[in-house]
Image 1: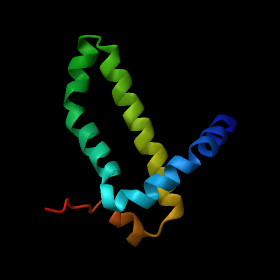
Image 2: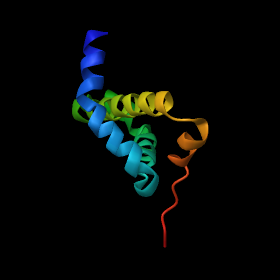
Image 3: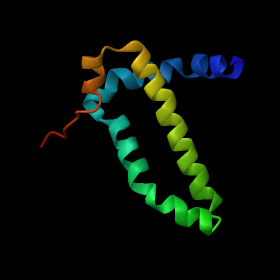
Image 4: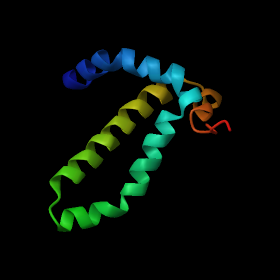
Length: 90
């Protein structure tokens, strides 16, 4: 738990920036979409012992979890919904 507290303290400015900009950029949703689209490849990567791909997927999932923890703890349900309803402007 001490390591988790250090991680939260070290990333607070990045998380605040993402919370502020994400409704316009859709970066969190994009990260989640990329992760989900690549999960099909995880089984193949494990069978082929492609440790680089597995490591990248692990890191992406870790980032998603950390960001969602911040988002859920600091936002109302309505605000949180804005971060997942991004639509690119034409």
